[in-house]
Image 1 (cartoon, one colour):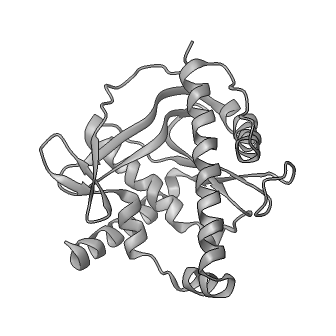
Image 2 (cartoon, rainbow, N blue to C red):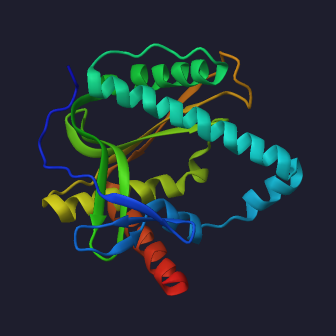
Length: 234
C-alpha cells in the first residue's frame, strides 16, 4: 500500500531538452526553464571553478558522475518506499548499497516526521515563468510544506546552501499559484556519503529548514534570480 494521501490533482508535465537545457512544456503550450536551470545559470561558480582546477577535470568528472549516480539511486529507494509502503532491498553493487544506507538515514531521521504525503515527484509551474519537480508535498509535523531529498559527498555548512531555500520557495510559489494554497514552509532532507568512497559508514544526515518567518526574504531572493535569468538568457 502506498503512503500517499491524494489531496490535489497533480499532473505530470512533459520535459524536453532545448539546446542542452531542461525545459518543461506547460499545459498552455509554452516551454519554460526549470528551477534548477535558472539557479545554475545565475549562481556564483567561483568556488566550483577553483575546485575543478584543483582536483583536475578528470577527477572532477569522476566525482560528480559518481555522486549523481548515488543520488539518483537514493531518490529511487525513497520513491519506491513512498509508492509501495515497503522498504526496498539494496542492490548488489557498492554504489547501490551506499545509496540504500543513505536513504535509510533520510527515512529514519526525516520521514518519521512526515504526517501525510500528498504527492511524490510533483511537477509544478507558474505559466510562462518556470517549472520544476519537487520530491514531496505534504505535512511535516502537521504543517503543509514542500520537501526535497538531497545527497552530498560531504556535510554542508548552512551558508553553502542558499539555493536550497530558493528552490523550496520556487516550488512553494508554483504550488500556491496552481492550487490556491499558502505554503510557506519547506524542508531539505540530506544525507552525505561521508567521503568520496562507497564504503559503508560515515553517512551523515542533515536537514535545512525554511520557516514561514523567513519565507518573504527568500521569496524576494528567488524572484531576483528569476528576473536576472530572464534579463540575461531570454
